[in-house]
Image 1 (tube, rainbow, N blue to C red):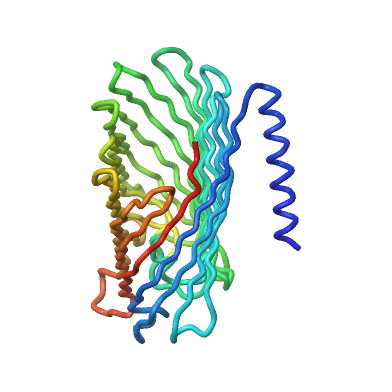
Image 2 (cartoon, rainbow, N blue to C red):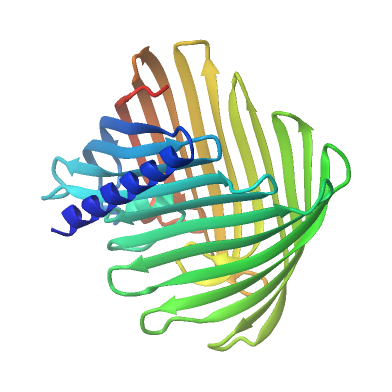
Length: 374
């Protein structure tokens, strides 16, 4: 019943948006249809160190891409149906959804929003999102929004908002709500400098949760080496205050992101040190080092790999920290007409302990199909 109501509401909303778009001008509506199949082996199915099992996965995705000359909206919902031969008596269903919006509301005003949510019943799904050592299902939501106004050729101001929530089925977890304000000045065609202020509200969920807030003051720099290679860096400090003990602390912060794109592929490198929700979904000091790349090997093959190293601990220096990492890779043969066949492997593990309970390796053969869009 609830699914039908949500589907009907989505259909009405889509129809209204399409009608409004036609009134303003031509709009394109394209379906998003994807299906993935995988068969392989998982070395630690229950994340308890008791052994592995053969794995089967079915991953459908359905959505819409709507666009005209001023805005672009993408809506996708899907999931992963995981089936094991011996270790689990029933299939596991992980759900996910994502909304991405890019809009130019005025020649000077732009709006960008990206919201994604995952409901995972499988610990491997949690580890893929940087959460280690937790059992049971969890809802993870991560979103961001940015409205930017260009005052003149040089100056731009922007309002930002970031949301991060992890809620376990037991009712525990945490959420962070972060509004912010940014001002930057373009010094030349490549370099942009400015500053940003953000206010973090960390909300604990469940009994024994910890609440806190932080004021972040950051210097911002963006540099475009070429049209396809850019660098964004931030540095500053956060004034942290915990409502459940710990007092006030000053936490140094820094973040760097390097983006590259081209005909041969795409790459991203991200380094971050600052306040946030950590590996156990608790507010504190959070460090992250992440990298991803996709390389197109001619017209018929594609290589993708991504991974990260995540550490979280107590404010201000990361005491009693938890360190985990994850890596994934796939070599795919692009058969044609949206069909691909690939060999994939992944590993998720804790790097701060000799206990292999949290080590999980998987390898599989994948078959994927996507409806071709214009």
